[in-house]
Image (cartoon, rainbow, N blue to C red; front, side, top):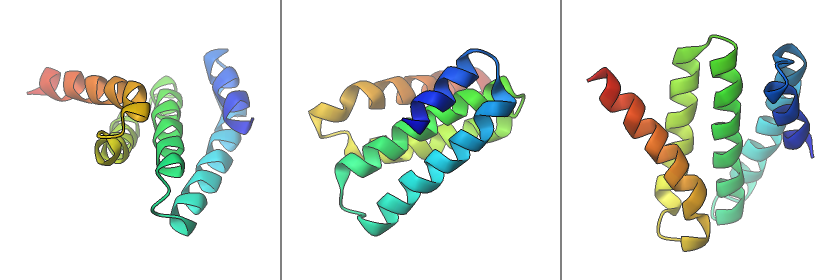
Length: 105
C-alpha cells in the first residue's frame, strides 16, 4: 500500500511528500530480498519499486540517480527474465534502459 501512496503522490506532482514513502518502501523491499535472496517474487517487487522510484527521481531533477536506479531494476529483472510471469515489467525497464543508453551513444 505504501508503494501505491508514493506513486500517487509522485504522479500528482507532490514529490516532496512522496519521497519518504518511496524510501520506506525501498527499505522494506530490500530487507525482504536480503532475508530471502532466492525469493523471485521479492526480487520482482523490488525491481518494480526501483523502476517506479526512478520516476520520482526523474521528476525531481535527479537524472543520474534515475539512471542508476533503473539500472538496478534492470539487473534484477534481467536475472528473472526466464520467468514468463515477470516479463511485462522486465520488458518495460529494459526498453527504457536501452533507449536511454543508445540515445547517449
